[in-house]
Length: 122
Image 1 (cartoon, rainbow, N blue to C red):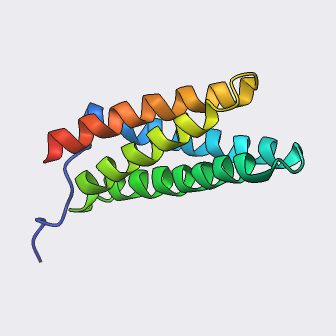
Image 2: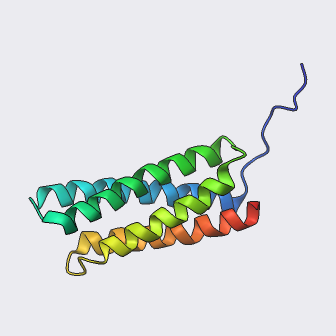
Image 3: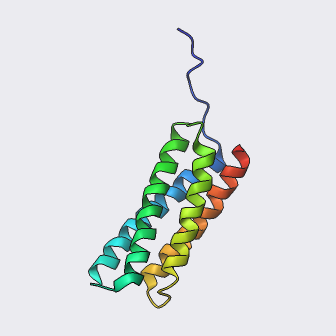
């Protein structure tokens, strides 16, 4: 049995991207809880919730794929950046809510790192 299956250490850029994804995932989860506690808000609230759920799921999956060195990680990073962009835009529809603003900032930071990761691996 050979050691060819061992993985090289993650690059600093990949480590930073994983950290940004996990941070964004947590922020989206917190924002969902905050959003749900606000009560009903009609279509606008549902659109934000959908964006938060998509972003939360994508960032977690993207981090997982990078950590296990999936060959699909670069494509996932590109998709994750899109989900983060959409979530940031949705959160900015409530610019008076500090939680939404923090979430949008976290999403933008993650999107930027994921775009760089997708480009580096392509």
